[in-house]
Image (cartoon, rainbow, N blue to C red):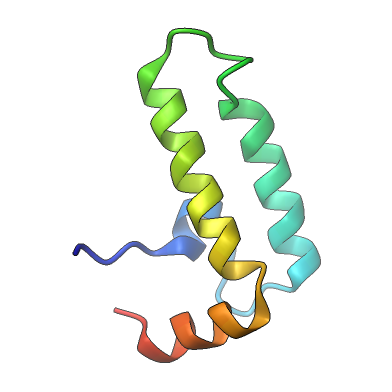
Length: 71
């Protein structure tokens, strides 16, 4: 499994607050949402990647585990 830098995917720093992560996710999710980009497979894949990153970084336990294991 390849390492994915979820912070880079969302465009935030490692020490970003939960609020900053949420704002970055919402901004990018609107930009790459499949309804905004019908038929664009690349945007759909990017949206899925954003969701995955947000699922990990928005949960304190998952984020702590991710930060601990990292790359």
